[in-house]
Amino acid sequence: MDQLNQNLRLSLFNFASGEGIIAPRLSVDIAKVLSMIRFSLILLSGLVLLISSSFAQTDREQAIIDRLSPIGSVCMAGEACAQAAVATASLGPRSAEDIYNTSCMACHLTGAANAPLFGNVEQWAPRIAKGKDALYASVFNGIEVNGVLAMPVNGLCLDCSQDELRAVVDYMVSATEQ
Ligand code: HEC
Image (cartoon, rainbow, N blue to C red; front, side, top):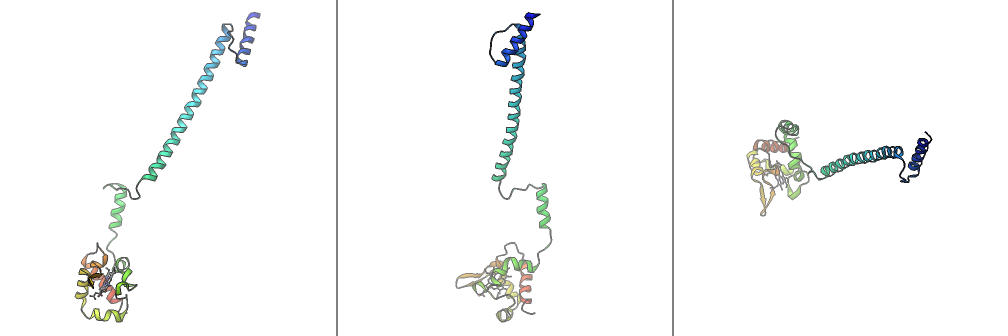
């Protein structure tokens, strides 16, 4: 019994001091168990570190993917984003005023290249005198001045139908009648 006590004390001392003295069997067993616990703790903390770093990695990867992705992403037919585009496209016809504001105003509000000013009766009178069909034709064909296309074909509205352009001309002419 005394011998056992002494062995135990010795083994605890060995563990606490960290010295690898070969102790009797019991102390070796305890030391083994303790070192196994220590080893598994190290393993566990390593695992936790690995998992957390892999999460950080995916976060970083996502950030890079976000940064590299193009500003406009492709929408495939049937996807939610494609339906949004269809909804916008079917908002109904543009008004003549909308088209004027987006395509014609740049020149006809500033008088760029001597464009007749919007609502200016004097500047429009001789043009209106030619008749509306002549005005429509000017828009469809453009007007060349000294070899330069001063009034661009379709007034730069590339997706305007001829009916839409006629409505815009009517809108511009009626602005001189108020
Ligand atoms: C880049 C400038 C520019 C834009 C954009 C522009 N115009 Fe003009 N427009 C002109 C100029 C310059 C003239 C005068 C040309 C001339 O007769 O000397 C003119 C003349 C006209 C005339 C008179 C034509 C005639 O026979 O007397 C009409 C009508 C007209 N523009 C309609 C439009 C409409 C509608 C749009 C938009 C859909 C438009 N313009 C966009 C520059 C522009």
